[in-house]
Image 1 (spheres, rainbow, N blue to C red):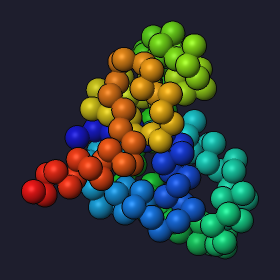
Image 2 (image 1 turned 45 degrees about the vertical axis):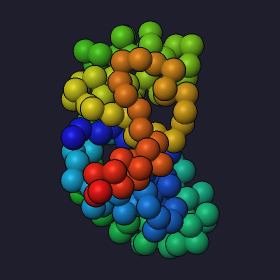
Image 3 (image 1 turned 180 degrees about the vertical axis):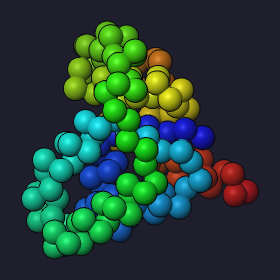
Image 4 (image 1 turned 90 degrees about the vertical axis):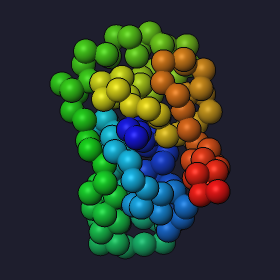
Length: 141
């Protein structure tokens, strides 16, 4: 299963040792994210460290652990789909077009985001953390 993760998922996993972090580390899936996501997370590192009540060293350790599971896509890998993704997201949230183009580039099964507006586009299926937990509980039956 190929999943593109949104920045809010990565931030959530950094702030708390939560279900989100456990899913990222343990779920048998191929995770991807555009380089823009990593840049965004690092831009807010100070705020994340403060909110999580962790040190810079702990942030770096957790980030490294998470990035071991995530393939970072360069602009060059997603450029072919950029225009289509921008068109799909222009009236939703143009800033999230990078995640749609990343999903299209790797032929992802899903985008994992807790931003419900992603569901307004119809190119890539979207899962929230809650959706993934429900899906896993059904599979375990």
